[in-house]
Amino acid sequence: MTTRYLMLEARRAYRNKRFLVFTVGMPVVLFLIYVQMYGKGAIHGVDVRAYLMVSMAAFGAMSGAMSAGTRIALERQSGWNRQLRLTPLKPVSYLVAKAAVAMVVAVPSVILVYGAGALVAHVRLSPQEWVVSAAGLWLALIPFAVIGVVIGYVASPDSAQAIFPAIFMTLSLFGGIFIPVEAMPKLMANLAQLLPSYWLGIIGRSPLGLGGFEWKAVPVLLAWTVVLTLIVVRRYRVDTART
Image 1: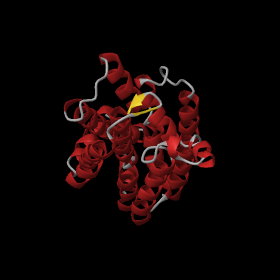
Image 2: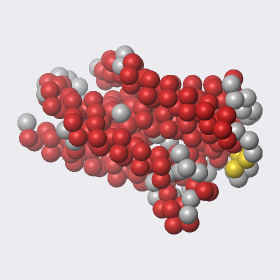
Image 3: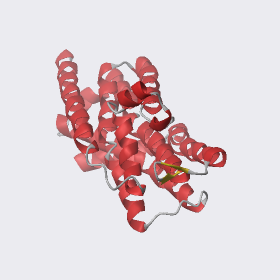
């Protein structure tokens, strides 16, 4: 039943055309624009085109992964999650499915931006670099999927529509997705390393010329995931107790 619910949720997410435009179409367009403007040179040994490709893929994938929050808030308001609690679907399965759908929804952003990088921007990487970069970037989205679930359980539908872009843009701007950390003042660059978005970009770019996979990112992202998961469990219990 968990698998069936996961498939239904993923299908529902992909039917939202406006969502697909902003999470899939916009990152590709921004990437192609930035490549035309800044696509020469290298940043810390990484070709600028590849650097921008990873950043824009991360931008779109973050949006997709965190978008579950608004849907959860709507389901809480409509009472749909209360109805689900009357089915054999276990609470943990519901939460895991929501996070899993967020991960699935993030896939097209990574694939299409990387595809644009290869076919349009002529980014040249070895097969191993393509696979490790894309797979690492996708796996590093786990804490962002949990952030989306947290938003869904702490906000109403109206406030979720304001909280989601505020958190998303904060992570993008100050985590090195839109502005390279190398261009930030020292204090901002140090603070950026506390954000999961910084390590998301590092994982995506580290196989491309930064000396191999950055394993230091793993415990940081794991810590974010654990703390956020505990918040989700707490908020879910509070929400359940109210009904």
